[in-house]
Each structure stands twice: as C-alpha cells, then as structure tokens.
Length: 394
Ligand SMILES: Cc1ncc(COP(=O)(O)O)c(C=O)c1O
Image (tube, rainbow, N blue to C red):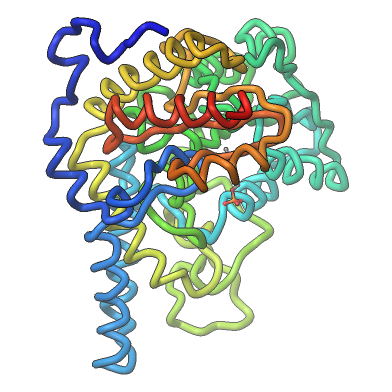
C-alpha cells in the first residue's frame, strides 16, 4: 500500500493555517481516542465545558438570573448569525432542526395556486416528515431524486414550477457528504416565485456559509455536530425581507412583540425572526452552543474548509488504496467533511472500531468518517487502518 504520509506535499497540505496542536490541547478526548464522528457529535472542549459550568454556577449562586440567561441566548443567536453572515434579528432558537422545519412549514401558505413543495430525497428523514405532515394543509410534496448518491441542479430546474411554494434542500447530504449548490437552487426557485429552505446541519462549522450571497430564505442547523455543541438546541435564519409576512402555527409567548406584557388574548408578533421563538429557550444549551460556535468563528470557516479538503482527499485516496468502497462522489469540491464507505453491518463496524480507539459514525449501509478542524493526517490514517482491519476481519 502506498504510504501517503511519506509523499512530499506542500506545507499547506501538511498543516492548517491555524495552530492545530494548540487547539488539540483544548480537547481532552484526544488523549484516548480518535474522534471521526463529527457528523454525529463533536467532542467536548475546555471552552464548552466552562460555558456549561458558568450556567451551573450562576444557577447555584444566584438562584435564578433570567436577565443574564436571556442575554446568553441573545448572544448565542448573534454567534450563529455571525457564522452565516446574517444579523441577530434574523435568528430564532429551537430545541431541534425538526421543530424549526415544522415551524417554517406551518408558516408557508399552501393554498391558492401554490401548493407544491419540492423536497430532495437527500434530506434527513425528519425534514421529509415535516413537509409530508403539511399534506393535510394541502401540500403536494414532489421529490427530487438522488442518483448515484448525488442530486442534480437540472432536476430542480425540471421540478420547480410556478405552483411551487417552497423548495427544501439540504446543504450536505447526511449519508455521504454530497454538497448541494444552494445558491444555484435559490436562483431557480426565486425565478419561479418559490422560496428556499436549507438544512445546513451537515455543513455548518466546516465551510463558509453566507446566506445573503447564496440568497437562501431560511436556513436551519443544530449544534451537536460540527458546531462543537450539544443536543437540545438549534437555530433558524429567516430572511429579514420575508419575516413580516410569516406567522407560524407553532408559537408561544417568546414569539410575541413583548413577551412580558402577559396578554393572554393578544397574538401579536415580534417584528424579527424571534416571532418563530416559542417557549422558554434552552438556556443551558445556549451557553454551550455559543461557546462552540465561538470556536468555529475563531478558527475560521475558510481555514477549516481548506484543512478538511486535505483530510477528505486523504480519506478518499487512502480508502481506495485499502480497497474500501466509497459511497458518493470523490470530488472534494462537491463534498462536506464526511466520507462514507459501504459496509455490511455498519452498527457492528462502529462498535468494533470504537473498541480499537476510533469513533466513526454508522448510518444505514455506510460507515462515515467525518474529521473536523482539530483532526490530523495521522488521525485519518489510523481511522482508515482500523476500518480496513475491521471490515477485512483482522
Ligand atoms: C442533515 C440533518 N438534518 C436534521 C437532523 C436531525 O435534526 P434534529 O434531531 O435536531 O431534529 C440531522 C441529524 O442527524 C441531520 O443530519
């Protein structure tokens, strides 16, 4: 087998533009295992742990401190906005992407001449479910096919028509990391008067995302994957020019113009995206989420993307050299950080790899290796060696 590590490479291909070893010291888990499961759950850092402790300390010492806690939620929204080039008043907070999607789905008018919802087959199932649930409200869901693990812009062009209310397209395909050109999809959708909803859960934190430049109308992501956070919190971007027209059927007191007027009979709407907020937000999770997103913003999405392109290339080439069967494209310009290999029993492979000190992520027919900014070329080689040994039965 070619020893890729010994091939001469330009400096930028050996190390990222940031101080990798300094960042690695912030992640205690790296002392014992090689985490390659960032498409599922990223590891704890000193900063995210300290953020959780800040909340616990505040609760313990002050009993309650709603002013400070609400401020932390606001700052978490602000940090999310920074990640996607939006502003804070365009961000709402939820406890999952499923909830965010349902809120958007219920805010879309599906009567009249626009009842069609165009959804890609590459969506995480929860997204498809949220749109299918709208059939009771008259939605007609049309599926954009996945072919050879990819979705073609031509298929959107063919399927989006002047009866289409909204298009739902993930940025990264959870199964194999295929990346959709959301700017191209936005152009097609807008040309026919349709809106675009993007699920960026599998890409945000690994690549620069600019909602303004891409022209997307809605974008949602949770925090436990590449955003270095925890379950139980997700954010939704709603384009400012759109928000005043939208009133979700999922609501609560935090969606009001002023939640603290306590008018039980008045359903007024906050002027910005916080009209999509519902009840008391997940405060502890917001502390951790903010700290996780600060790390991504500080390391820098472009520098992360550059390094993950190097690691992704190595995963593809190294997997091929070891006889592993790649699922999806081998073109890094069309891929997220995640590389998927076909295996017989992905759950069993995941368990066997964990025993050997590598954390992969099993999903249906594949095992996913999803490095993040802190991973090294050596991590990639170890993960591939362990995967090859497990599937080869040695
Ligand atoms: C692309 C994508 N969207 C949505 C989800 C589910 O999000 P949630 O559990 O926050 O509803 C996942 C979870 O793996 C995912 O990968």
